[in-house]
Length: 352
Ligand code: NAP
Ligand code: ZN
Image (cartoon, rainbow, N blue to C red; front, side, top):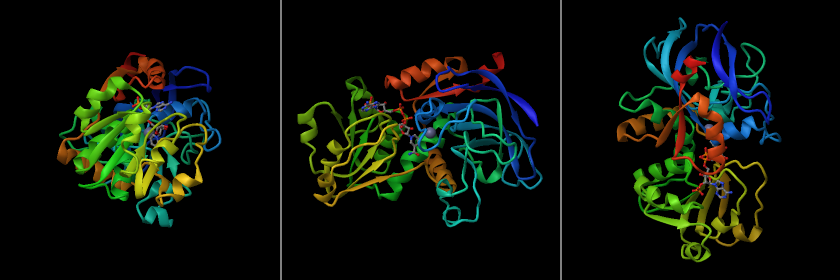
């Protein structure tokens, strides 16, 4: 066991603050990674403030962070895929049973015994897992991803959650050329949804509550931008979408978007607001519409997404911050004031 510097929250109302946490010495299947950058996902904020208490209550102290990019420091004797000095990445999961149908299908996030990167029981050390707002992490090689060397590392880190969470449903629901795709909420996830849908050849429409993001949405790859508060602009798109990805972090009316689907269209939620969202039966019945959800993506697909990003030079638009600004960054997330992901430069922990 060794100690590393980290940032943690002591309770749902405490600010994040400097601390030290234990990490295990790498076992034969482990990869020890020095963390260089970690993205800030809105899920970190939901979890730190215990907003998902019904689904996954937060255990304190909580060290969030699941968009991790770093350099391999040491590997266990059975690790063949990585060696010291390699770039490596870790997303939302660090373990699963490896034997259930979900694991066999490469969909480890649905394994009944999945261990998320933070806030789930740590079978090696006891207590719960601690995430990437820290100097280093030790992870089973099955959950360590390869980072294409051409990508900027600060901008690649958020691919590990914002990237895969938007890439996976687009592939699953068959977003291709000729499809009309909506992306609701231009935040960390939404802006990656726009980039992927555009790269996959779809006609992309962004729905935003922030008029100031219009130019950016077009630059990121949107063909059209709709200010969602404007009912007549919304009405122009009624009954026309094949697929809408909803990446909103807060309470909002999803039925407005259901009405924009064409026959057999799908509205897919990736956003995970604290409160339940009301659904009207008629919005589903009429037009044979589907309402679905999607959670991150499995390990094989995460590697596929990273390779796709390497091939097409796709990264996230990031604002790099020192860890000392994490509390300010959370407040800005709540105001939808992020362009379009905060990425923490973990070297800043060295000054603590
Ligand atoms: P984010 O960067 O904060 O973006 C959320 C965006 O939602 C905002 O930028 C804003 O976009 C829009 N929004 C915020 N409040 C709103 C409101 N009251 N009404 C309408 N729109 C609003 O968050 P994120 O990191 O992208 O995460 C988005 C959600 O996905 C979070 O709930 C997060 O927990 C969840 N998530 C789910 C998964 C999964 O596996 N399913 C993975 C990661 C994250 P505009 O300014 O354009 O309106
Ligand atoms: Zn996330």
